Image 1 (cartoon, rainbow, N blue to C red):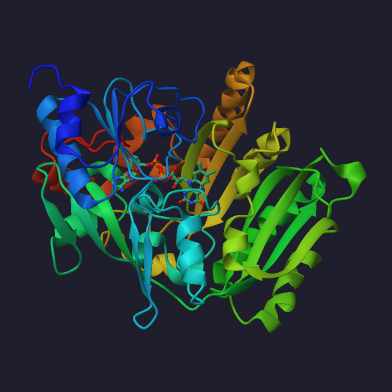
Image 2 (image 1 turned 30 degrees about the horizontal axis):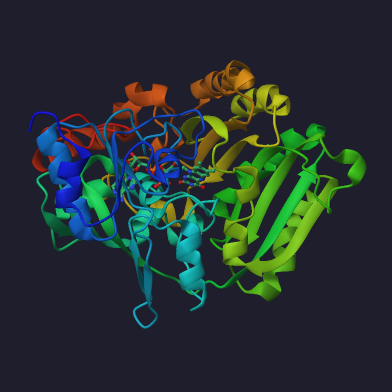
Length: 456
Ligand SMILES: Cc1cc2nc3c(=O)[nH]c(=O)nc-3n(C[C@H](O)[C@H](O)[C@H](O)COP(=O)(O)OP(=O)(O)OC[C@H]3O[C@@H](n4cnc5c(N)ncnc54)[C@H](O)[C@@H]3O)c2cc1C
């Protein structure tokens, strides 16, 4: 095909095909991270698998740059591109729950909000992230770290099967019995291997959880980090918790005269019996004087959406991530040097625990290689004013460089920026070559390259 046209694509796809000037194009071309203001030549808003097949074939044969947009949350804006073709999956967001089997089948464009809404109606849930507008697709394909992962494993550990459109336009089901090599690679390997049109997840009986959000003065931060590293080692798996830095937003439970002040915080949840929830919060009340707290039971979807307002679509952002095996005193010193300088309400460092059920799976059982790591660190700044780009990025980089010597060489691909492609081998360490082999089998020409890329 010489110069591919939108008309040619429209002849092959029943779904809406948008180009500049069409209603809906502006919304479809943008992604969550406002730093990526790109203009694809064509956007296919896939409504069914056939649309995805046709779009993949068209992009491949026309030699167009191809991006897949699930929830559009990737920090490096992988869900859009300049002058290429985007397969936007935002219309493919069905979630069908089988309450008897405790499984759910969800479309590749569903968000965790869509997913939780559907499964909560049956008193069921599975591991997602900490923001409900994030896509199930990108989050799961990278691993899936969130509130429930100590108890139920990462999202990939709950992925039973995936329906995938591969680079040759074929549809395959990847599971332990079908295309096991692809199933292995999808669980941590990101969007490198094809377009996942359906995800089948294992669910668990989780309806309401007991939650505690505790704010402490900055001079309690050392106690908080030291307490956390010991406590989380053997804490019951019903616990999820992580330390954070937080500039106090104007919320009712925080004294009005402290709004805008910087605190260290613990975000705690208990997914065990609710009547044990209050006792489960006690260690966090006791570790240091609490300035403000919000504690009580809430539906799991409400917990999953609690941070949503801080990260609206279009906010500019920059991310860095590391895996951490031991949270040493020297590492804590580095946190204490940079965390209190957190520059925005929507900037923070979260140190998620990835022990518990995440360690039940071996380092080479899935593509996600860091099964011995105990923590996933993410440093993120999000801001509205483009004039602050350099300053905000610098804070993230400085913090990252201070903690990197106390961390593993690799990090979680979903917490990486666009300048992190050089870390790809470290992110997968012993699993990297096997990923390259699977890439060669399913995408030898690297059609799916708008991602943390595994080169064939
Ligand atoms: C506010 C916010 C909070 C977050 N919190 C968490 C968290 O708690 N835990 C966590 O683990 N991560 C978290 N993340 C990171 C998140 O996991 C990644 O940004 C992830 O890539 C987002 O997936 P997405 O589908 O929304 O993004 P997209 O930008 O749409 O996609 C991300 C990548 O996956 C590919 N892709 C998307 N859909 C498909 C598909 N159907 N088939 C194949 N490839 C596809 C894309 O091409 C791209 O390379 C958060 C991100 C944000 C912005």
